[in-house]
Image 1: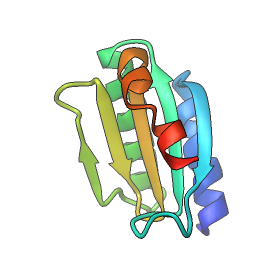
Image 2 (image 1 turned 180 degrees about the horizontal axis):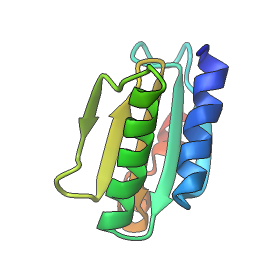
Image 3 (image 1 turned 45 degrees about the horizontal axis):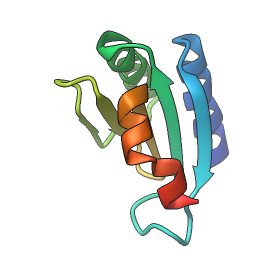
Image 4 (image 1 turned 90 degrees about the vertical axis):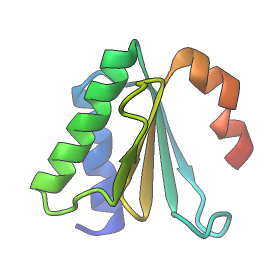
Length: 105
């Protein structure tokens, strides 16, 4: 999958799990780590973990396994690193506190 196809695939997997308030940030040129940040919210710890697991397992099955997954233990904020795309799944309070959208825009 090319970058755009993978991004759309991940967005579909977030939608499948009812992830909310999805934001797609292009950080190419601003970050040396990744090109795209996908940020979404989950309703609870379990929901946040489920969204991240769905993205991770679906990408792995499609031949694009994540490089790493961070935060699954707490469920406040789970990061799925797919290389050129980094997915942040957060609870509302955590998302409000860190305000990644403002930081990167």
